Image 1 (cartoon, rainbow, N blue to C red):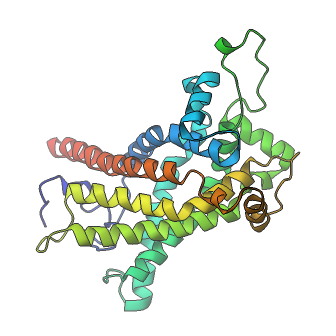
Image 2: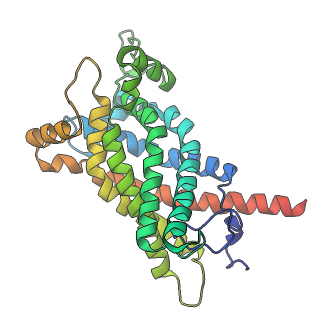
Length: 323
């Protein structure tokens, strides 16, 4: 089976299309180099917006997006937007591999259970359930790094150029130091604060992501073609990310609030209590703080993911073929 003109060899014999239509080989594997590259680039593209989003979700003194950007830059300069990026960068490659692998294995298992063969055509329900399983698998790996990221992002460290007073030593001196402090002060359970909210967010968002990607690819691919083209993959991935984050934002707000709650605060006793207290004090609109940022960030990040897959695999294919 040939390519469609834009280097579809980037997935050939390596991956199953996320739409669930298995067209290139029975053993789907995630290329480690590609996962590492796309993960690093997507983090670099989306992280500053993520920092602004977390601050808006967890603090009430910002008047909006631009006010948060201006205040962050005024007091902490550019590095203020990249606080905690180490935690995300360390986790993103492993998490991406686990997510893709879990999705593929869950889809195979569902098809074998329901249709008697792992390579059977999956239904939209199968795609959604496999996507939810992928989201659940991510939680175990991402929760500790998410806690460290949120704590770092909300920690205030004035830039030395903005004060004549000696700058005090921050509580968290880096992502790894943050993890050690949390374990020391809150025990290992502190690394899994907000786990229930993260589970709700990632299961629902992943189910919607994989399903909407599948539907959009099918809808945008012209009749007579057995796989989506380059532009279709980019648009489908981008819009699928927007839809997934649109659904996941309420639990994303609750997750951030639970994770920033340190041992000496104990503001929230759990997911339901956090939802109830947040809505009681700020109204239902609090659950949609950062919705616009999540959607804006989701589109280019997912486009970067797919562009990187294409570019890196085309390069590696060319290099291997030369040998």
